[in-house]
Length: 318
Length: 158
Image (cartoon, rainbow over all chains, first blue to last red; front, side):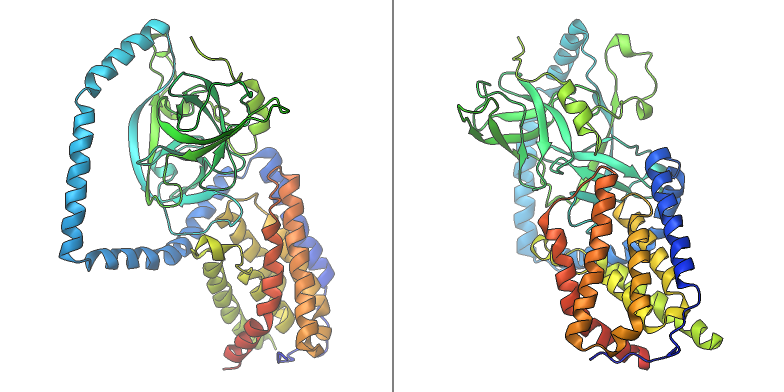
């Protein structure tokens, strides 16, 4: 039995009910103001600064351990790492050789078609903080915030592909919602044939799904999905994932398609924030990139229902 | 008496900070679902142990801290925690004479109530989390309650 020190055996707590009601009203007021009127964004930004020391205190020992392990790693490991990295760099350079020419060609073609898909023009690298924000939502905290120009709805990439988008911005930190979160959806395109659809998260970091493809849609396992750039939230042409499984049940009108995300959602330590420029000549008078992408583009959390049906699926592009 | 309350503020705030750190500490994904709500248990402990030293204020501000860190609608954890801390304060005289099993069962009821308020506000604000695993936290919390309360009262007596 747990021994409590009976400091007030009298049992009277004056006005417990009154204080409880007061605090509850205060909390309810906060909820309503935050949800309905969205007035608390500024307050929250500064509150997040107060929370920063706690977050830093929790995550720094883990980062310190990583640093320690790195600094005592053996000469052999370092040499092996160096060899791998050199090989990767060589490969990347080979691939880059034609990049300039292709980029110019792509811009000419886009201009011809007056395509307004945004082009990524500025990157900032952020470190993922070692924190579990919420066990039931796929979100991470990154150490770049409003001070670095990060904005809500901004696209976030990692070395493999699309990582997610910014859900909330604090002064020093920002919260990124992963593409695999159950409330996240992103407009994509099958690289092989240009088929456009929407990839939706499942709540499982190793899986996305394409719920809006008909059973007759031309997709096969192994197809690469890239961002279509529709809606303007994400830059076009970045890998989102690879189709792993297509289930076609003749009794159903829609196929069940599973996708493995291209980004290392559970392993990345660094991510890139992307700023877009609207690139077509017609859009050159558009506002500066920081405010340009419409927040409704790739459905911020909670708005999926509003945006998803608005996009047509299954129509192969000529 | 007044002086006594002033002294208690420090251990209260310190234990709440430690619990907050434990609540966001990175854990392997497999263990993550089994993480108890440490901060909630600490708030319950203080509500039962010394309700006059401001258990409700502690509950409200701890909840607010959770809201900011978890990035949910502001006031969600604050409301749930305040309600349940008030209930714990109301029950405290009975809780003190309960056996360990009865105490744990009461704590389980309080933790379930806490999760239910969170669940309800999640739904009302349009981000429902229907994963069954969210109802695991009350079970784990009730199981570790005797350990945690014993440890805290041991440290507190020093």
